[in-house]
Image (cartoon, rainbow, N blue to C red):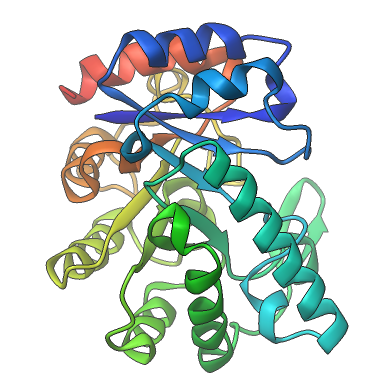
Length: 280
């Protein structure tokens, strides 16, 4: 099963046709993102009727992050906790059950721009603080399913230390954003997949955000466009080509956790192409 991602900001565009496809095809999952805070209007009842196991969410990483829950002043931490509670309640009403994705830090707080490039501008986040925040967030979003910590500027070693620190805390996994790993991850994709496979082997859930980029910015290109541009060819990031790595990632994630994270206008074309290419 592959999943698509839908945003509240697109509800006047192609969103109704995507929801119709989700209703008609039980082999598609969906990740929801209420980034604009507008909800999904009259489509909410239809989204709520979809099976819970097919629905995950991406919590609002520009408004709050894991570190905002513990690393900020008391008032700011309380505000972040309230924001998490509001989102959890909203998505619970939509019947989400496949999990929630969170970023370690808000992007604007840890980056700077150099021309068109987004560059990390700080030390790696403190593992102990993030582990504390993960426990808080996992409890706050428990009704939605597992909590997935998404990679942005952190490397594999950092994630290994985080999960070692988490110990036996249940219901927590990783969200591998393939585009982030390519730009900022510091290791080729096969090594990231080895890490994800090790987590899955230890019983932890794995989620993913899948798209192409040209290696300098987070382009969120559909896979079909990346293929047309030659981005599936062998490269330092995927020496054996991109397609076999995506097939492997799909197998590691399973079911609804392989999310095609691209603009909604290209959603259905990309879904159909990706299904054929991946044999999903």
